[in-house]
Image (cartoon, rainbow, N blue to C red; front, top):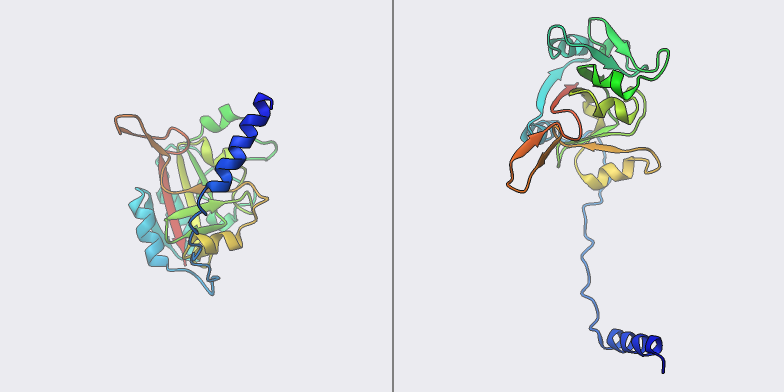
Length: 203
């Protein structure tokens, strides 16, 4: 018997004598969403992640968004962000006429986007590059992200979210401002994305 055959024989013997694996419970909450999720719980969990929550009616979104942008700050929006959601000041539109470079995005202070859904259980907003969201770099480079979430986009649980999402799209999950901790657990914000996140919930 060669060394290789001996090793394989020992592996087969060990596997044959191994106990059967314990069954893993799969009783996840799989109930499909039957309507908008719990808006108040979503607002609470978003706040837990140190993001700021704001409320708006459809007709006051631009006013609320404008109030969140510091005087003199430069804002960028995706080209298909609804006009009624855009800040009431001069903004840079990504993709008109060409997509901004990373250096150009880094020179801007604020990005305003929509999202594809929000998850109440985790306080997470999800972007998939769809209408009003822009490309991934647009929401990762500027230091301040203002994200607009309609109440009908909120679901209660993560399984409900995955039933809705298209896994072939570039999904970005955002739970609060970008943050990390070093080995001594010192929190540092803004390492992998915006250090400030404002979530505007639109009824």
